[in-house]
Image 1 (cartoon, rainbow, N blue to C red):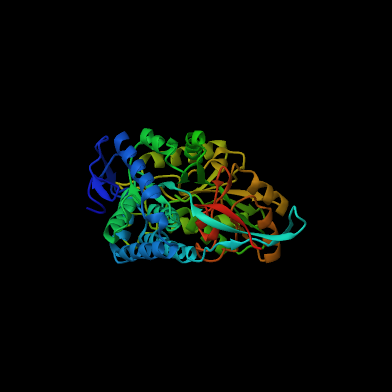
Image 2: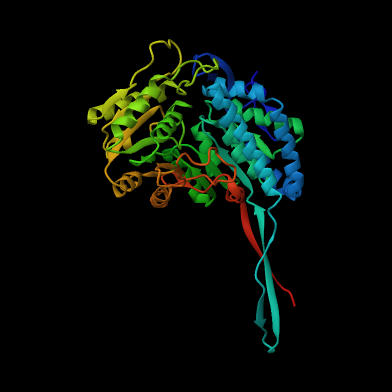
Length: 492
């Protein structure tokens, strides 16, 4: 058993057998071996989760505790998880196909860093005094009016997470919601459920009050019951733009708040004076560390035509040196895609690009050495036009497209000519010019010459356009799970 109690759901502080459709197999994408089974919630289970989460918020002790008390309890939850780091990293590798270096860093260490940062920052959220205002009274005297802004929990938060970095995103949604006094229903991807149920293990172990955190796995129909139910006050979702749009529609009749972190087709602009080695390594990291299954990956490589051939050759060399295989081997530097349907989409999109006129530089096939698992070689397409499907649709696989440009205005136009706006990057020896280009890019984040070197807990993350709205991380990510109340009063 990897996490939780096999085949059960965590509702109201108890492990319960689902009344729904039984269970589904959880598959290791590198070996196609079944590593366990997860219970599937039915309508009664969903209703039970909604009921206990609502009751825990309205009548339970959680929202009435001080922020410091909640942070202390959640700190113990983090301690419990940290003490099982090796087990959790192995779990992440088994269910996501993540290589070990990525499982150790972004998937686990960064997750814990973000969680603990939220706990510290939450204790610093204090009522904010508003300016004092003299006000003339009806009798001709003058009084002084003042006010405070306070931040209060929204209510029941539904957190829906994807398969690619599940442990990090489960914590990134649950921890800020919980520490600010909300209750949470966590619905993980059915492909990677154990990264959620291990958090339920931790909640049970530290004695989190019943109903404060609930973990349910369910199919589309019962997911829609969750998103449309008036007992849910806020939805935080990470996933595709199409699913995000469907969730927003389901939430609309009850006017519940949504935080949407959706897809991306991010552009990396490499000017003629850019550091080609650094830019090529960024392309390598984006497209191979998790087989390109990252919403913020630099998938459109927008390169000045004078250096494009040199850049393409450098990326080709890096791609062809990637060690593809089972990530249980620490020497492996790229694992599989999550399932066969994901690999089929990658194949179809590469074929579409070639049919439109792209030049296949490297990749474009399944590695012959892998008899099992959903592997695909890192693929580079050159001579791509930004209007083609391969340049416009999110592929979520190890495929980069190279688009040439002649001047900065052309590069900015290409970068902004997208339905998405999640991330971006600029490489240039002229840092001032790179900064100016970054300001012109219509996207939620831009890394200049490689960025800050890490996914910082201080940096808000999120997109615009079809990449969504709302932010995670930073102070703003914490306050997304609150509403603002103004208290106005006479001072004298």
